[in-house]
Length: 156
Length: 83
Image 1 (cartoon, rainbow over the protein chains, first blue to last red):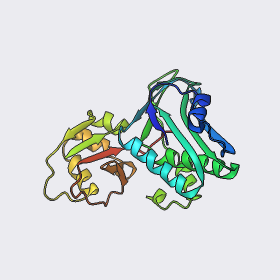
Image 2: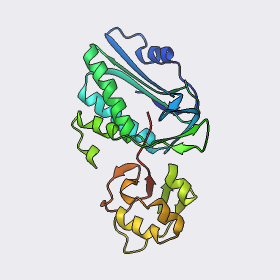
Image 3: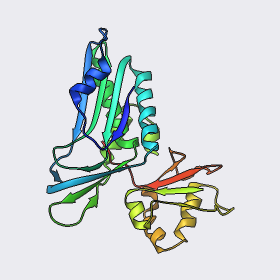
């Protein structure tokens, strides 16, 4: 199951085809794409720098993916996360899930994103139009999102 | 033992990694933070809000009361903000 951490952009349709290949048992394909907004806390931003922890990032994403495959009957999944300098409108993250039926694909995609947001070691630094670049604060709501999946470690 | 710092922890300390000789009385992540804080004002500033700093031992998230044991790599960083 592909996991990639890269600076370059990704092609959503190409990634779907790569994952699906010519299998005919897939009945549902869900994709989630996270993109860079042009505003942060009501102020315009010009760019964003994404830092990560090489090695741990891939390890965390693999663990999260494995958990999703244990919980849902997935036929495939892809996680791609970019790092480096990104601008408003740019893609940041792609999650694809394949299943025979939509419920598993929808739920697993949401699970993957919820866990990625609070476990994968990425940090965003935003450069506003005016003033100094600043690190984005983590949101309580991202950790809270894990409790719906019954995750105890989220309270750590 | 190798220490790694990320995001604003890295910026405040002024380096992304270093190798240290672990003092004998340092057994847990919390002990290590307390020891680092004494190593200079930049560490003191980086760990000022101790409870907000996340730690990983050999690339796995851990709490501050976790034993270091024979860890190879310990990382300190702010709460993650990817996705």
